[in-house]
Each structure stands twice: as C-alpha cells, then as structure tokens.
Length: 84
Image (cartoon, rainbow, N blue to C red; front, top):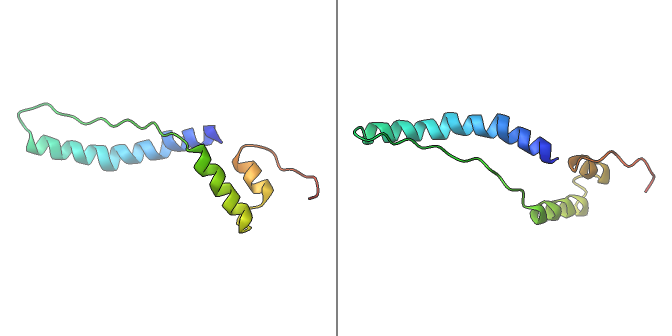
C-alpha cells in the first residue's frame, strides 16, 4: 500500500502540481519581479497519518462500506478466504 501511494504521488500528484501550481506561481513571480531571478520549487513529501487511516477503516467496517477483504487488499494483504 505504501508503494502504491508513492507511485501515485510520483506520477500523478507531482506532475499535476508542477504543471498547475508551480509553473503558474513561477510565471507570476517572473512577471512581478523581473529584476530578480526568483523561482519557486515545491517539495512533495507526503506523510500518511496512520491513526486517521485506521479510523477510516473502522468506519468502513461499522457502516459496511468495505468488507474485511477489501480493507486487507488496501493494506497490501491477500484476501482471507476463510469463512467468517
């Protein structure tokens, strides 16, 4: 699951942020501060809040939004084929 989040971050969030946020801010800076060589570079390190993630899994189970097997798959485990 951590690797999936990293891949999503590297190939979806970072390019989108560079294209839509970073480039627009750099254009704004360049237009308003022509005599300086300012450039904005963003850092894209995201931390996973494990306690919040576990709370969401509890809510998924409480309201039957996701099965135990679906949560296991989200965590990177195989389905549990044993009966309940």
